[in-house]
Image (cartoon, rainbow, N blue to C red; front, side):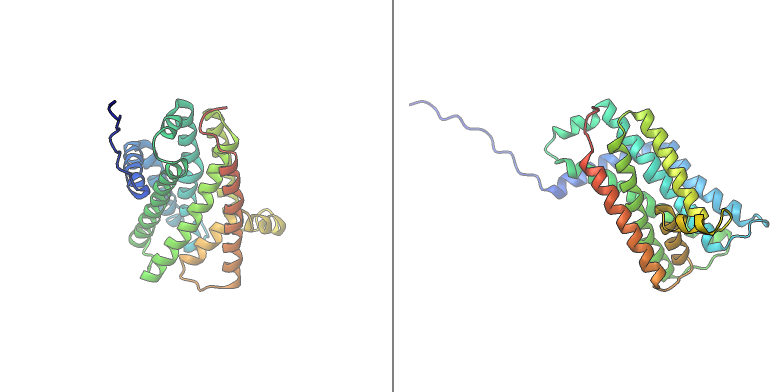
Length: 257
């Protein structure tokens, strides 16, 4: 009688356990990139304090903080995230991750969650610095409202970054494209608060992704209530997020074409 060949049973690993392993690895990569951490944390803080102490800058406090938060979000989600993803795709890192038991959506989710956490940390840092250096008073409700807004903004900007890396393949081109898009979003957020280029351009900027996010941040940092304008801005942000996310998922490639 021939012996029956048996194979050792491999214990099933839950998606949560796999996500925890991926998060740990992505967090180590994020914290070891000192240059990115310095740029994304220090530059918005310098902007906030610099504008705040500029006597000629006739800009409301909440708008200054909103612009600093928007800049940090753009640096993390629109410029750094797609550039890192494109580099890993070029080096074959993503392709190697695809042959692991972790599904593709879990791999991307881990990276996205690290970026979202980074945006929330940046938000807290800016609010604390603003409270200490510029004597801005924030209550518990202001922190909650602003953090929720930053969460929505991170989803919006990360979906834009995902769309960039889905449509553009070469790492150098991704970096150039993400830089241009990031600058455009920041400028649109600025012009959404001023009629320097005319009321028509101000209205266009107001309903752009950067303008809608900037408007929500400016409202949240003053503890403003829920108004029709806030509802419209949230709807605009969710609409842009959905469009960018569909593009980013539909045309994303794990290996360079």
